[in-house]
Image 1 (spheres, rainbow, N blue to C red):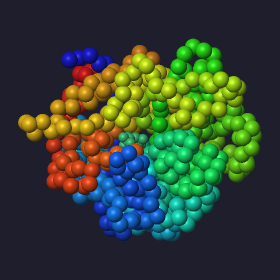
Image 2: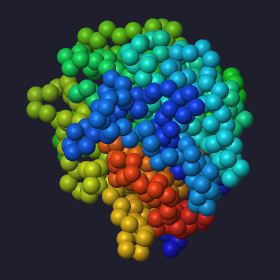
Image 3: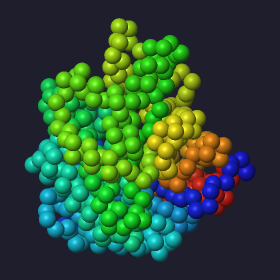
Image 4: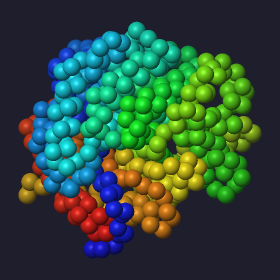
Length: 479
Ligand code: BGP
């Protein structure tokens, strides 16, 4: 059915994954232990937790992932069949610098990504690479306190330079920190904060610690952008922001102001990445809160000089908030101040499905940041079932994608948003980042493995495989 619009020539259709969620082989070829390797599965209502090293009796699903480390040749073949023009993955920092603070990189780790990128390129698929996707070396967490420590800036830049140099002729599109803004959920010692390597006590000021760590990450990103451009001026180096627009519950001015503050608090990361400056409200906020942050004049100059080339973003859902009686400060806290959207349906994990929010968001970003965009994650996590005929009939996933791709195309064709490409998340089943489950599946390609790593790990095509293949073949016209 030709219900869609055609995308521009050279549009980068593809799929997205992250190293720690699918590679497995967590100790192969000199790899060190990452924070994801000491993150438990989180089962029966107990959230995932970072343990102090690998502990007996706990389940660590990132140790096996979907065994991509060994099976990538077969997977690349399937990606080619899908028609992928690009494939977004990350480089596991611990394969390159096992502890994170060595002076020289691990050659065997570098060679793995040489093999992977060469194989992708041989299939006509260009790699799109995230430098840091929730997989900091655990040693940097233990010995330095992660990004609470300014020293991490140099260690990250060393890693970035090593891989920029090595893959300068194989990779053009890069991103620095995956979903850098997801750490705004500071109400509790939240796992997303731990991705920045923060390990604090319950009584510590998590919010202040988050702003400090985020500042160091933004400086590290800006330095990496400059280093990358020096190594290869053709590099396109982007940020990666988790985009979930936040709507006011009603037209009440207090609801509208609260939603605006919520957007500011969630997306100031993008302001710094793209505009190279802190937005005006934020230093005022630090002052009011009494935060004493280490932000130097040299840092501010670095941020200005290291703005990104494009906005990479994930889009899964939207949120809603409302003003609170007597709160003139609009002190929005995530996730406590979210309320349900009565107009939307949800996934089994409570993620509110909102294709129009994608078009809204793309317009909002284009007007605010004035940069090309790249949708590097979008997708639908579901409990897939193999039916009696041996196939997964995932029409719910097809319908999610159809509606989101249509909204994306409207943003491009009708609204003039400048979009580089689209890479649906978890194009092949992998371990969920938030829950550690295999059962929360996103793929066009099914992997026969369960939550405990049992199964043949064989790959098979879901119904959505053929559907997405047609979408790509028609350059977005056939939805
Ligand atoms: C994003 C992450 C991914 C990915 C995805 C889906 O937040 O960048 O790593 O996992 O969301 O989330 P989940 O796996 O929790 O369903």
